[in-house]
Image 1: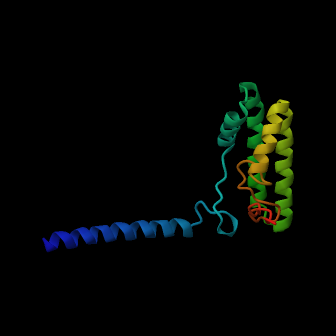
Image 2 (image 1 turned 90 degrees about the vertical axis):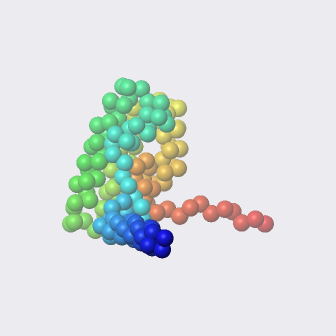
Image 3 (image 1 turned 30 degrees about the vertical axis):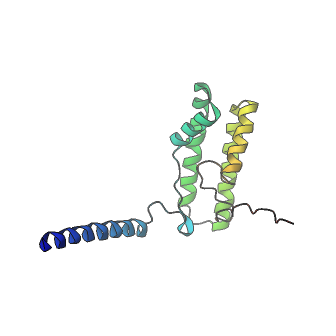
Length: 151
């Protein structure tokens, strides 16, 4: 009986340690982590289009016009991430310009009602808009809104 209990405890211990080591190894490799160790998973253009389609009720024509805009933005961002000649501040500024250009192109395809919803979506998701992790120009996560002090 004691052998069974010891074996069971040993198996549970090995399983727990293995899971903890795997999680630590994954985190040390930077998987799922953005700047400063913040969780930052970028959505693919297809995922972003799918989310926009659900939230804005896009037509198939609108989807066909928006998809290349999202793909172009992704390509520009990847190129920018690989450019080590720019300072961090210049790179963040350029990212903001790319995002703004993308948002302007998307808005031109949307109806006035969709444009309003799109603006609300971008406000909710921070300065970076959808799929950008809400990163601000300085690369830091925007702080949560503070409640007004009660008087």
